[in-house]
Length: 219
Image (spheres, rainbow, N blue to C red):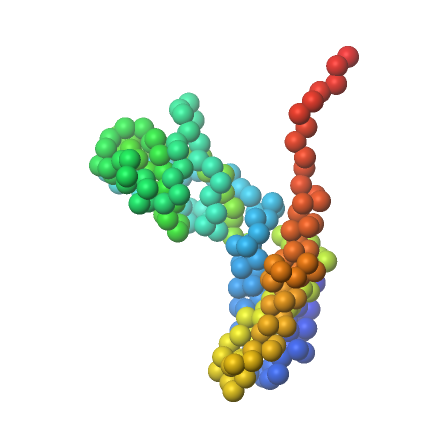
């Protein structure tokens, strides 16, 4: 499905499609796409990039140079031992003070900010294995290629409707029931539904994931 087709189906299923213009619905569709990439690590969004440490500073903003989704897998340093990745800044501070000088030994990610200990006297290149943000759907013909086609309807049509109806029913007398919100969440992102869009995406990823080969042929 392309952006125009997704938007058309969303408009058909809304109570009052006139209350949301095409640009607004497009924003919700793109928000749903970003949400999907946040829930499931999409292989096509895996990237390798670099950032440099900053002199006399114990952090660097990754998103200033990379399309960073907030999901960091690994940090590498050329010709040096890879730094330990701490789960948060608080635990990094239990073992380090951020005014120590030397080659980077440990890092912690907070949002888009990568904190590091120690601070190199000369800028040091950090190689990152990370997930990028999905490209926004802008033109009517744009297709969300990071998600398999068979998941488009449940994830991006019903997922967008879930977000829209959550807003609509919160602002109406239906707030206590939220029937349409629950219905579309069940079809899109509810992990307790075996046939929800997010579970179908997980099943697909499990099928196409390359398996590690641990043996070789002997000749």
